[in-house]
Length: 142
Image (tube, rainbow, N blue to C red):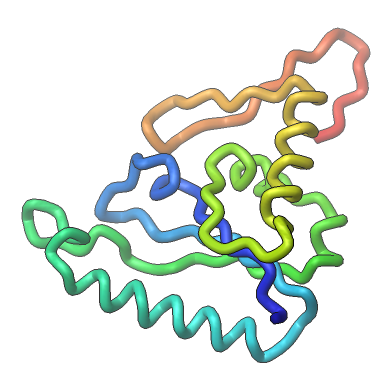
């Protein structure tokens, strides 16, 4: 019951992964607990099992994903803005969502992106930066 949402983001969510990619997960809990460690350990075991299957290997037989990188936050931590929230909102695929916590989080951040006029500019397939249309003398807040 402490687990509220799991959101896949990053290159895997965009369908642009390579053999150096990791699996990025954003995990929201109701409160800090040992459940966080338990879930992260289970996810690692699940991914390790999938890595052994041929469909998660490239044509050379190399594993496609090296590690799981997670950002685990409790519900109250969502009020402290982090710039990575933009990436999560743009790429996010909800894998699990109790009470639509993840859905509402993504919606809120997408609204912020729109209100600030932010755009993500890709330099290469997985390299990008954020750009905002700024007028001379305007105060910038990301």
